Structure formats: structure tokens, C-alpha cells
Image 1: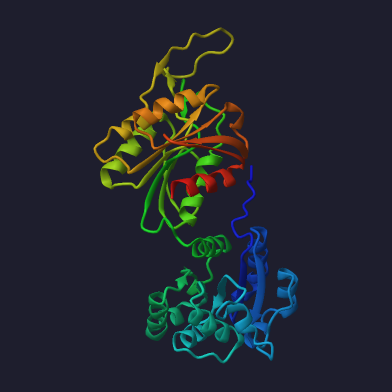
Image 2: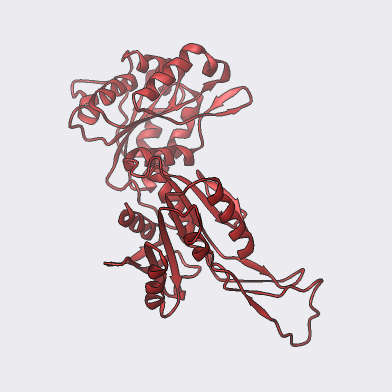
Length: 384
């Protein structure tokens, strides 16, 4: 299932495009930004127009592409003091453009927008793309370092086939989201458990829950978007992008992974969003023959969240998820045991991309309904 994200709703992004062959990716990039709710305005250099027609960007953004700064002083309207734009994204950024920006030279529409944006304190994201030898040039490297000291976000290229290729669109969008979030979780570490556990019954079969892992993934994405360094422990073979993925299939493996991570470092937040097995069958060797009734002994599993709360290197803030028809009552017990917040819900949210949750703390409760992306956003808002 895919959840709808609207993290850029209400944001205006100026998309600066310079003369790299990677400019052909900008139609897709503009569409990706707009899908998240952004209003995108394209600005192109003459060199970029020789690679990609301005009409293509006009179509992709829904606005006439700016190819020269005219009497309307567009660079000030969008990126000057009190300008309408929220962020300047330059993708791709050539070696020529990077070095000009670092030295305050503005002889193209894109560099003029950059000078204005940097001077006004607007967030700027720059995405280099060039041949690898150019990317290694000491002057280019020095200019990139200068831009970083100014607070400009540099999205590192992919080094492949002798080229410093433009970063993947998903990565560019993620870095843009981070730059616009204000980074309230910058410098913070977050540990999340996510998805179902799979407990071995025999060499073929497992017992598991109907959890999809969507909630945990959305919590991880939102924490990363807000600036945190995130670890997610789950059994999904598909990695969650932009975070550290730790694979753990069973509750026992998840407990071991959590203990190991907590021994290595201190976490600011622990969010227990996984459907961790309360019971596991006593496993049998081989395959249980079919055709006859079978009695399965279920063994009680240790409570991972209690283990974390009682550990020596306890995370500073612990959020428990409680699933059940009487989850509000059980939430109170978790708060008494040491949880800082409990997200309580009923089993009908399992496997769905929407849900209703009560976010419960000792002195208040917030009810939230919507997509799990929206729930994750609200949960983090209430933790900050």
C-alpha cells in the first residue's frame, strides 16, 4: 500500500536548472515535488535550454519558465527579502555554477537567483552533477566546502562510470523536505521497531501478525525528514530509504538487535511500533505432516519495551504502541511502567494505510485519524 504524503503543501520551490545532461531528469523531479504539494517555479540557464527545452519545464511545473531576469526582477520577487519562495533548489548544479555561486558571481538567471536567495537567508539545496574529474578538482571541492559553511545543503552525487551523477530523485526530494522542515530533530538519534515478527513453527511454516509495517516506516521517514539520524529494526526485505535498516525477523532477533544497538550508543527516542510477538510456538524440526490436527504449544515471549525501559542505556523518550480493544486501559499500565507516550489503537488498523490513534501521555490525550503518514507527522509534532 502507498500512503499519500503532503509534506510540501503550501511550499513554493524555485527549481534552478543548469547546463548538465542531468537536466533531462528535471521534468520527473518537478512532478515529484508537485505530488507532495509543492508549487514549483522553473528557472533555466541558456546552457540548460540547449539540453532541455524550457517548454518541458513549463509543462512540468504549470508556470512559465524563467530564462532571463527581466524588468520584473523575478529573482527578488521569488528569492529576495520577503520573497514568495520558500526554498531554492538547484538541480543539476554544474562545476561552473557551483564556483560562481561560491564567489558571488551572478551572470546567469540561476546564479542571480542564488545570490539573492543566499543574501536573504532562504534555504538553498544544491545538487552537483558533472564528470568525476571535475568533481575532484580542488577548486570545485573548495567551493563546495564554502557553500556548506554558509548553511547550503549539498546533495552528494552518485559516483558511477567515471561520472558524478545527479542524486536519485527520491534523495533530492528527501533533502528538500529536510531543508524545509527547520530540522527540529537535528543531532537527535531515533530507534524504531516496525512491522510483524515471524515465529518459526517448523522448517516451512511461521506464525505472524497482519501488520504491514507502514506505521513504523512512516515514523522513520518523518523523523529523518525532521533531521534525526534514524535506525529502524524490522523484518522487511525492502529497506526504508535514508535511514539505517537492521533486519530482525523474530521477536528474539529483534530483542537482540535492540540490546546491541542500545549498548553501542544512547538514543534520544525509542518508538516501539512493531507488532512484536507475545507468543512463539515451540519449533519443530522438519515439516509437520499435513492431514491431521496438530496441537501447538505457545511460549510467552519477553516484552521488548520493558527490557528497553529497564536497560542501563535507556532512551530519553520512549513511545509505546498498544493494539487491542481495551488499549486505553493497557496504555495506562505502560505509562506507569515508564513509557512517555502510548499510541493506542484497535486491530482494524492492521495492514491498512489509514488509522485512528489516541496519543496518550500522563496529563493529556490527542486523538488523530488519517493516513499513517499524517499520524506520524502528528505524533512527532507532539513529541517535539
